[in-house]
Image (cartoon, rainbow, N blue to C red):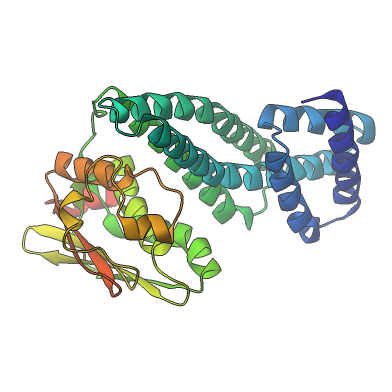
Length: 351
């Protein structure tokens, strides 16, 4: 960050810091703090520079013996980093898509096009990981600081969980791209897992994007579902990919339904949308790396074309199956079946 840019944002941050510390309850300034986090991202300012701006503003404006002011200062940094983390996760996916599109154009027709794109994406994903790790470490540090002083605001629990989910999703995507570039897959840790918990988390994560398009996103989950044999991060990746795709390719005012039920010795999850649909000709190819349908490219200009390939590989690695039923202009239903776990009540209570 240049000295001029640092000076500009130092003044902006210091002004907001003073306002934050002047209020008994700084909650009304949450939106301003979040907006500043987005501004930092747009200006290309990383989380280490954000922390430097924060530290300089605190040193100049805060009495370090004033416990309440210090708590407010940490609360401001937390709000800024939470907004930055979520925005950066979405920004990272766009960068990956743009990198893939550029390499596709450059290597079109070359026999090694896929290898070139994998290599490029692996390099890009490696660079994207570090800022998110910095955000994650700082958020954890601030939480510890505030909890030790009995000042952790409970209303931030859900928002912290959302940014943590976004960061973990980006980190998992990074790991998967790196593994794909080496044509390998990370070793999964299969264990009995409660599916409803993962479903609720993914649906809550998808609500923001769904609401922005006036899409009705609903969850229909049987209350007595057995556990599934799965890897925790792989399960989240599968569900997130399917739900995000459904929202992405459903037009404004449509609907996406996520349902789960038991069928024999399997637990079945279906993601049903009223989106653009997939032609019969394209359906056999949607799990190929980097493949995107013509309709998909028209509806959404960005996209890597790796999501469903990764999803299929993860489902297969957990002894599951994935199927699609779709009709152009009507919508799609993706059906994932995973083995049900035979879990005793004692194990259930311990998980």
